[in-house]
Image (tube, rainbow, N blue to C red; front, side, top):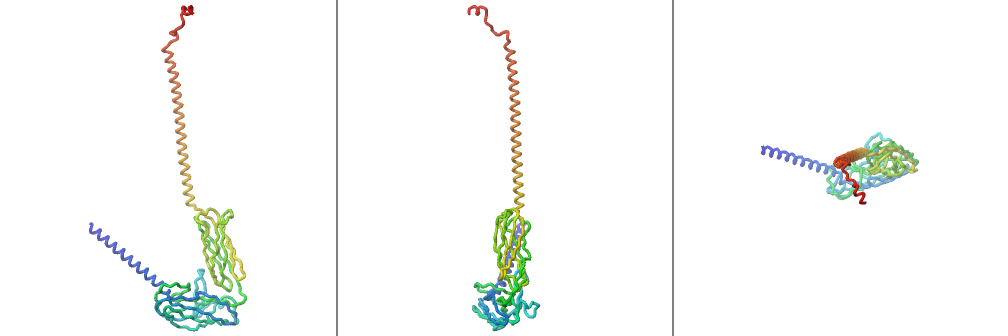
Length: 362
């Protein structure tokens, strides 16, 4: 029996070790895969250029290779749109249905289309933008990206600038603004919070949609007040770009853990060059009902215990009073009984009276 148990324990140990080895292997594999794009860095990751219709302007994008091996690939231009509320760009290559309102890749030419980025070095890409004379004012959005033709080696651990990447690409985003009267418009799609929360901070969700011709960056604050009108929390709205025909969701957490009662939250923000206003308000409740139930039950239990103890004390005191009264009655009865006994032992006829001789002597 002992041998069977030992054998079973050894098998379990072997399985455990095997599982641990597989987990480590997967972790290392994932880590190496995640590092496959790290050696490439683009600067600037984002840049804004303003140009008049009918004019030509230039720009520069630098691609760095921090790896230990040279990387060959192609340099391309593509329009991009942001059609989700997370703000991640969607690159569009070739013929697309993208509205010409926001397309500009066809206006761009690069100094080179193929190249090799040496190890620990960079390649500078010059670009020219020729804006048609009839271009409508507003925002145009394109990306200049490098696409390796071979697998990218791992990085050496140097610090990189934030950049947009898709698969094995790394791209620098260009926000082109064509001068002229630009239509600005935005609205709050939703400003919401849970109607009831047990604890704070409370997550307040703001969704703003841009219906204008150029990306906007709303700036403002969310203020939370309690039922008495006193301010309990204030936080600046997270600044983020919202592209035309797209919306962004911004989540803000306000308040402290211990919040009780009804609260109101108000959003006041501005956007665009003219400082247009965005405003909204909502109400919500916060009450730690589980804790309240526990406290209420505890109070009820304490009160019941006090009542029980008090009743017992009163009953005991009453009982003592009754016992004392009974003892007093018994004592009175005993006293009367003793008087009767004494009277029976010494009759009145035997009580001595002064004699006639004694009276005469006196």
